Image 1: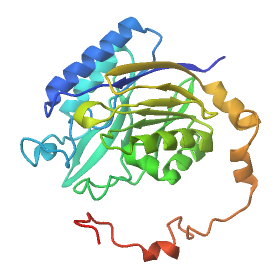
Image 2: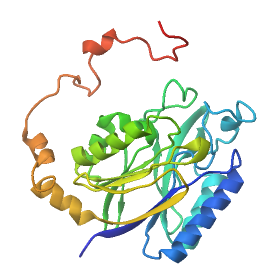
Image 3: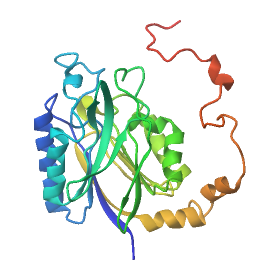
Image 4: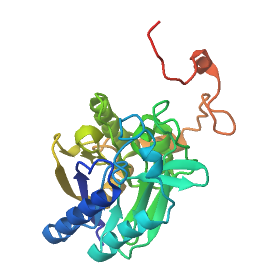
Length: 300
């Protein structure tokens, strides 16, 4: 039985600082996708699509982002679950600010076509120092779609740390979903990393960005051999693609474009990497010579 999976990545602008209006727009887009592309199984949005802002972007009030933080599950996620339930689609609604006690996380959820939250992932690497005020998650996230395969979730800046993507692949992820929100000039750099992440891990890599003040677009879909399937421009765009998870199996078994069987060689190498200690944490090395993680006010 083939393992084909239809996905739609929604590169869109949000309604500034208006959670309800943004969720309404997400519902309209998902319904339209359901009608126009009935073969699509999953609809995916960009990072922080629901609250529609991050701390370093000027808001009407400095603490608007904190006010938009909500528990999971809660009223926001119930509305999102209703979208999935009514359209009978898997839904990854980007991410939202999750309030848990005194902590606030940048959290992505995956909702089943039955409207159930089947996975929750808290961003492990907030973009520091700019995302100061959000707490870091400490658990990797994979989930299974019956008869299809295993998917992994990461958020935006997590991609800059290849250990995250590699761990998801090690956990069996065949498709890595990365909602992102990059309005800065480093999006071109991220496109290289997204393609490299697919190559290094012989997996599909789906990176969906926002547009407008909340993202510079250029969403990207890459196949397990590192070929770019689709790259959006900077306007609102719906990217639709049929992923073939058997392609992942072939690439990992026979090698990238039929050549390098890298994951198998890594498995069999027997090499211990000295950058990590026995607990898997980063050793000192040359990293100890770096300064503190802080916002630099001026050049030296």
